[in-house]
Length: 220
Image (tube, rainbow, N blue to C red):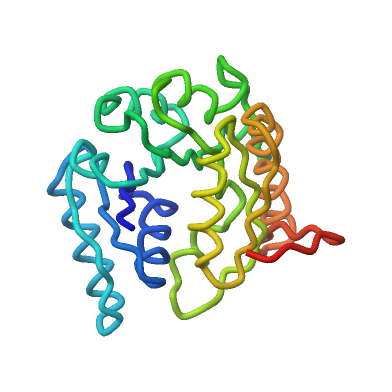
Protein backbone atom coordinates (compact mmCIF):
# COMPACT_ATOMS: atom_id res chain seq x y z
CA UNK A 1 0.00 0.00 0.00
CA UNK A 2 1.18 3.49 -0.83
CA UNK A 3 0.45 6.22 1.73
CA UNK A 4 0.79 9.92 0.97
CA UNK A 5 1.42 12.36 3.82
CA UNK A 6 0.45 15.97 3.17
CA UNK A 7 2.45 18.40 5.28
CA UNK A 8 5.08 15.78 5.97
CA UNK A 9 7.81 18.33 6.67
CA UNK A 10 6.79 18.81 10.32
CA UNK A 11 7.81 16.54 13.24
CA UNK A 12 4.58 14.51 13.26
CA UNK A 13 4.41 14.04 9.49
CA UNK A 14 8.06 13.17 8.99
CA UNK A 15 8.04 10.89 12.02
CA UNK A 16 5.01 9.06 10.71
CA UNK A 17 6.62 8.75 7.28
CA UNK A 18 9.69 7.07 8.73
CA UNK A 19 7.67 4.76 10.97
CA UNK A 20 5.30 3.66 8.21
CA UNK A 21 8.17 3.04 5.80
CA UNK A 22 9.96 1.01 8.46
CA UNK A 23 7.10 -1.51 8.55
CA UNK A 24 6.90 -1.92 4.78
CA UNK A 25 4.57 0.79 3.47
CA UNK A 26 5.50 2.84 0.43
CA UNK A 27 5.36 6.46 1.60
CA UNK A 28 5.20 9.72 -0.34
CA UNK A 29 6.11 12.77 1.74
CA UNK A 30 4.30 15.84 0.49
CA UNK A 31 4.66 19.57 0.97
CA UNK A 32 3.54 22.75 -0.74
CA UNK A 33 7.07 22.73 -2.17
CA UNK A 34 8.29 19.54 -3.81
CA UNK A 35 11.87 20.64 -3.12
CA UNK A 36 11.15 20.96 0.61
CA UNK A 37 9.62 17.49 0.51
CA UNK A 38 12.74 16.19 -1.22
CA UNK A 39 14.91 17.67 1.55
CA UNK A 40 12.86 15.89 4.19
CA UNK A 41 12.91 12.62 2.25
CA UNK A 42 16.67 12.81 1.83
CA UNK A 43 17.09 13.57 5.52
CA UNK A 44 15.02 10.56 6.57
CA UNK A 45 16.79 8.19 4.19
CA UNK A 46 20.18 9.47 5.33
CA UNK A 47 19.32 9.25 9.02
CA UNK A 48 18.10 5.67 8.69
CA UNK A 49 20.62 4.49 6.13
CA UNK A 50 20.60 0.73 5.85
CA UNK A 51 16.90 0.30 6.60
CA UNK A 52 15.84 0.48 2.93
CA UNK A 53 12.95 2.86 3.58
CA UNK A 54 10.62 3.19 0.58
CA UNK A 55 10.07 6.96 0.76
CA UNK A 56 9.42 9.22 -2.21
CA UNK A 57 8.83 12.99 -2.35
CA UNK A 58 6.29 15.17 -4.12
CA UNK A 59 4.26 18.32 -3.74
CA UNK A 60 0.93 17.89 -1.93
CA UNK A 61 -0.87 17.20 -5.19
CA UNK A 62 1.53 14.39 -6.00
CA UNK A 63 1.31 12.91 -2.51
CA UNK A 64 -2.48 13.03 -2.70
CA UNK A 65 -2.34 10.57 -5.59
CA UNK A 66 -1.46 7.77 -3.13
CA UNK A 67 -3.97 5.06 -2.18
CA UNK A 68 -4.45 6.43 1.35
CA UNK A 69 -3.65 9.99 2.39
CA UNK A 70 -2.75 11.43 5.79
CA UNK A 71 -3.25 15.12 6.59
CA UNK A 72 -0.31 16.06 8.83
CA UNK A 73 -0.33 19.84 8.41
CA UNK A 74 -0.84 22.26 11.30
CA UNK A 75 -4.49 22.13 12.36
CA UNK A 76 -5.44 25.49 10.89
CA UNK A 77 -4.25 24.44 7.42
CA UNK A 78 -5.70 20.92 7.38
CA UNK A 79 -9.08 21.62 5.76
CA UNK A 80 -7.67 24.07 3.21
CA UNK A 81 -4.90 21.64 2.27
CA UNK A 82 -7.40 18.81 1.80
CA UNK A 83 -9.69 21.03 -0.27
CA UNK A 84 -6.80 22.08 -2.53
CA UNK A 85 -6.39 18.45 -3.64
CA UNK A 86 -10.05 17.40 -3.38
CA UNK A 87 -10.06 15.90 -6.87
CA UNK A 88 -7.16 13.56 -6.05
CA UNK A 89 -8.76 12.60 -2.71
CA UNK A 90 -12.16 11.70 -4.14
CA UNK A 91 -13.27 8.27 -2.93
CA UNK A 92 -10.15 7.72 -0.82
CA UNK A 93 -9.56 7.17 2.87
CA UNK A 94 -8.12 10.36 4.34
CA UNK A 95 -6.65 10.29 7.86
CA UNK A 96 -6.72 13.49 9.91
CA UNK A 97 -4.24 13.60 12.80
CA UNK A 98 -4.13 17.28 13.80
CA UNK A 99 -5.18 18.75 17.15
CA UNK A 100 -6.49 22.32 17.45
CA UNK A 101 -4.49 23.69 20.38
CA UNK A 102 -3.13 27.01 21.57
CA UNK A 103 -0.53 27.77 24.21
CA UNK A 104 -1.83 30.31 26.73
CA UNK A 105 0.80 31.27 29.25
CA UNK A 106 2.32 28.03 30.51
CA UNK A 107 -0.59 25.82 29.50
CA UNK A 108 -2.03 24.32 26.34
CA UNK A 109 -5.73 24.83 25.73
CA UNK A 110 -7.96 23.09 23.19
CA UNK A 111 -9.63 25.20 20.53
CA UNK A 112 -12.97 24.43 18.90
CA UNK A 113 -12.85 24.58 15.09
CA UNK A 114 -16.01 25.73 13.28
CA UNK A 115 -17.33 22.17 12.84
CA UNK A 116 -16.25 20.96 16.27
CA UNK A 117 -13.04 19.19 15.28
CA UNK A 118 -10.27 19.37 12.73
CA UNK A 119 -11.34 16.00 11.32
CA UNK A 120 -14.92 17.20 10.80
CA UNK A 121 -13.62 20.30 9.04
CA UNK A 122 -11.53 18.10 6.74
CA UNK A 123 -14.54 15.90 5.99
CA UNK A 124 -16.60 18.99 5.11
CA UNK A 125 -13.82 20.19 2.80
CA UNK A 126 -13.67 16.87 0.94
CA UNK A 127 -17.21 15.45 1.16
CA UNK A 128 -16.49 12.78 -1.45
CA UNK A 129 -13.65 11.33 0.63
CA UNK A 130 -13.88 9.02 3.63
CA UNK A 131 -12.22 10.79 6.53
CA UNK A 132 -10.98 9.05 9.67
CA UNK A 133 -9.51 10.74 12.73
CA UNK A 134 -6.50 8.96 14.26
CA UNK A 135 -2.95 9.26 15.66
CA UNK A 136 -3.68 12.37 17.75
CA UNK A 137 -1.92 11.24 20.92
CA UNK A 138 1.20 9.52 19.58
CA UNK A 139 4.34 11.48 20.58
CA UNK A 140 5.98 12.79 17.40
CA UNK A 141 9.56 12.44 18.65
CA UNK A 142 9.11 8.80 19.62
CA UNK A 143 7.21 8.11 16.40
CA UNK A 144 10.19 9.25 14.35
CA UNK A 145 12.85 7.43 16.38
CA UNK A 146 13.13 4.04 14.70
CA UNK A 147 15.63 2.83 17.28
CA UNK A 148 12.90 2.72 19.91
CA UNK A 149 9.35 1.51 20.27
CA UNK A 150 6.41 3.87 20.30
CA UNK A 151 3.77 2.58 22.71
CA UNK A 152 0.23 3.94 22.66
CA UNK A 153 -3.38 3.16 22.02
CA UNK A 154 -4.68 4.94 18.92
CA UNK A 155 -8.32 6.00 18.89
CA UNK A 156 -9.87 5.83 15.42
CA UNK A 157 -13.22 7.37 14.54
CA UNK A 158 -15.06 7.87 11.27
CA UNK A 159 -18.52 7.97 9.77
CA UNK A 160 -17.30 5.48 7.15
CA UNK A 161 -16.74 1.87 8.32
CA UNK A 162 -14.29 1.25 5.46
CA UNK A 163 -12.18 4.21 6.59
CA UNK A 164 -12.13 2.94 10.17
CA UNK A 165 -11.13 -0.54 8.98
CA UNK A 166 -8.37 0.75 6.70
CA UNK A 167 -6.94 3.05 9.38
CA UNK A 168 -7.00 0.30 11.99
CA UNK A 169 -5.22 -2.03 9.58
CA UNK A 170 -2.47 0.55 8.93
CA UNK A 171 -1.93 1.38 12.61
CA UNK A 172 -1.91 -2.29 13.61
CA UNK A 173 1.15 -2.86 11.41
CA UNK A 174 3.21 -0.63 13.73
CA UNK A 175 4.50 -2.66 16.70
CA UNK A 176 3.25 -1.51 20.13
CA UNK A 177 0.51 0.72 18.70
CA UNK A 178 -2.99 -0.63 19.39
CA UNK A 179 -5.78 0.85 17.26
CA UNK A 180 -9.24 1.06 18.85
CA UNK A 181 -12.53 1.79 17.10
CA UNK A 182 -13.81 4.92 18.89
CA UNK A 183 -17.04 5.33 16.94
CA UNK A 184 -18.28 8.07 14.65
CA UNK A 185 -16.46 11.22 13.59
CA UNK A 186 -18.31 13.31 16.18
CA UNK A 187 -16.03 11.74 18.78
CA UNK A 188 -13.02 13.41 17.17
CA UNK A 189 -13.77 16.59 19.12
CA UNK A 190 -12.99 15.22 22.61
CA UNK A 191 -10.17 13.05 21.24
CA UNK A 192 -8.42 16.06 19.71
CA UNK A 193 -9.05 18.21 22.80
CA UNK A 194 -7.49 15.61 25.11
CA UNK A 195 -4.13 16.23 23.43
CA UNK A 196 -3.94 19.43 25.51
CA UNK A 197 -4.04 17.33 28.68
CA UNK A 198 -1.22 15.08 27.46
CA UNK A 199 0.96 18.06 26.55
CA UNK A 200 0.36 19.56 29.98
CA UNK A 201 1.39 16.29 31.62
CA UNK A 202 4.52 16.19 29.46
CA UNK A 203 5.50 19.66 30.64
CA UNK A 204 4.74 19.09 34.30
CA UNK A 205 6.44 15.70 34.55
CA UNK A 206 9.10 16.21 31.86
CA UNK A 207 8.06 13.11 29.96
CA UNK A 208 6.34 11.94 26.77
CA UNK A 209 2.97 10.66 27.93
CA UNK A 210 0.87 8.37 25.78
CA UNK A 211 -2.57 6.81 26.21
CA UNK A 212 -3.31 3.22 27.26
CA UNK A 213 -6.78 1.87 28.09
CA UNK A 214 -7.28 -1.05 30.46
CA UNK A 215 -9.96 -3.69 30.22
CA UNK A 216 -10.03 -3.88 26.41
CA UNK A 217 -8.95 -7.10 24.73
CA UNK A 218 -8.76 -6.97 20.95
CA UNK A 219 -6.82 -8.81 18.29
CA UNK A 220 -5.76 -6.97 15.14
